[in-house]
Length: 273
Ligand code: FES
Image (cartoon, rainbow, N blue to C red; front, side, top):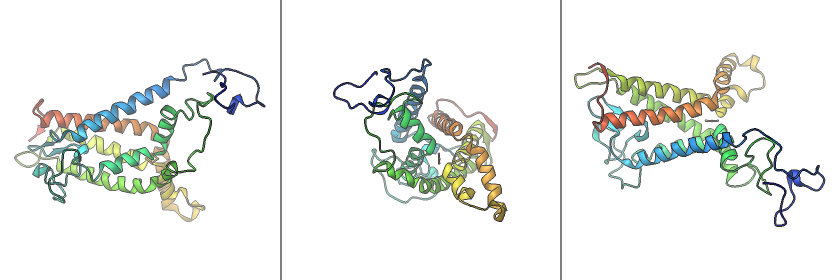
């Protein structure tokens, strides 16, 4: 895009008082690459997760008690009985309600309101900005001052819920050390535990976690324990973007592996049991 046309007001770098440069940007690098990769990555996950969440089968391995995180917790009468680790809360649900209806909406909101993902989709989807020093396609900008974007300020509550869901995923991963003869250990356990560990790192590296643990304090010297926790959270927080993407990958991988084993497509590689 170049200079504004008659139907679009001269804003931003095209304002009357700014130096007259007709180009949207003078950058010569491939500044579209990062937003395109972000779009492709997010779309791949959203499509995969949506299809699997509504699939309704191949989510539980009876012999080894593997439960995919996309179906946890499974609390309706529609769930396979063994997969109901926390009991049966409601009767059968129609096909358009995912079996993990208790957790999925909150996990979606947790990631949607995540500070890193906001940066990612404000750039790649909203084009605000598409890249640094590239003029916006928008004539107006209100940031996060109005509804609906002001609701992003509720992120910490979704962080608290995500901690509870991580505990549930941890319980599932522990229950999966099972075989028809008692204790069991297979490749599925390594995948499930690896996924849970990375989910914890992503969750605890959250900016809201950094704030509530110690970031909001004024005098660290008076709070040695919270200072130590804040220091550790800050260390993983510097990699928050990385863990956001890694966990999207491990969630898909974990679900895919459980799906293959649960559907009988491949056997689980067993070490014990
Ligand atoms: S900021 Fe990303 S999960 Fe909280």
